[in-house]
Length: 68
Image (cartoon, rainbow, N blue to C red; front, side, top):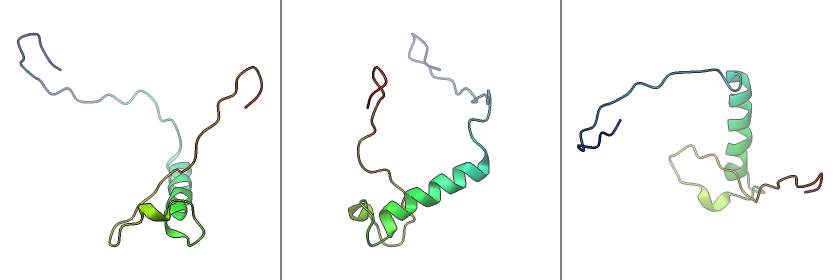
């Protein structure tokens, strides 16, 4: 928290709800790691030796009036 005086105070985060299960998070992470690690993946340039890297490549599409 930042006060007008410039003073700061740490505020502990409060978990409101769990968005996804740990299993779903693990699956998504694995898929995103494959984008970087697999030879045919589109995120190969993000690979860093010695690090586990996950990434999302491409552009997400938004539905507008029922169409992408």
